[in-house]
Amino acid sequence: MRANREKALLSHVCNKAREWGYANAPNPCAGVKGFRESGRDIYVTDEAFRAVYAVAHPTLQDAMDLAYLTGQRPADVLKVKRADIWGDHLHIVQNKTRKHLRIVIEGDLQAVIERIVARPRKMTGANLLQNDDGTPVSPFELRSRFDRARKAAGVTFQFRDIRAKSASDTGDLAHSQKLLGHQSRNMTEHYVRSRIGERVKPLR
Image: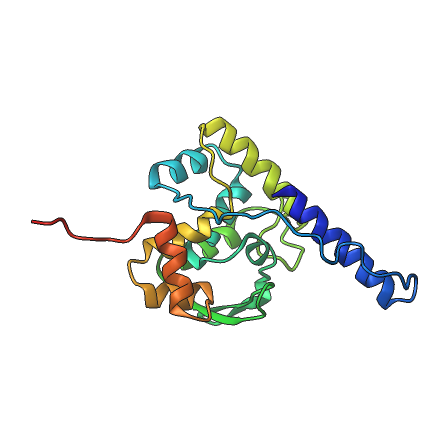
C-alpha cells in the first residue's frame, strides 16, 4: 500500500540524517505498525500481453520482450548495457539481491537483441534500451508508455507482472528458479502458484 511505501521512505530519510550527523533524535517511524499487504496474484495471459504489445511504443515492445524472455525486474531490464552482452551470454546483476546471472543468448532472446541493435537510431549511449536520440529509456518513460498502451488495450496488469508470467510459462520450476535468481525452490513455487494456481488432476 502507498502508506507503507511512504513510511519506508520517511524511515530511510531519518536513518540517513542520523548517519550523517544532521539529527540525533530517534526515528519517528520506529514502532509504527504498517498495513498488512497481500502479494500480487495477477497472471498475465498471452492475450493480454499481445494486446498491450500491439499498441506499444517500439522501446516498450523491446522492454516487454526482454522482461519476458529473461524474467527480470523492470529496473534490471532498463539498466542492461550493450557491454553486458558477453559473447553468447547476457550478464545481469540484479539490483535487489545482487545476484549474478548469465542468460544464454539464443532463440527468441537472440532475435530480440539483434532487432534492438539493428533498429535505426543514434546508438550513442551504453544502454541496450535507448530512445531514438540515444538517451537511455528512463523508468518514467517506461511507466508512461506502458500506462498509455495498457489503457489503449483495456487491460489492468502492471509491467512488473511480466516477471511472474515468465516464471509461470517455463513449465519447469527449476528453470524458473534459476532464471529469476530465487534463492530457494519454495520461493519460486509460491511465486508461480499464487499467480496460476497449483496444477492438479481431476478425481477421475
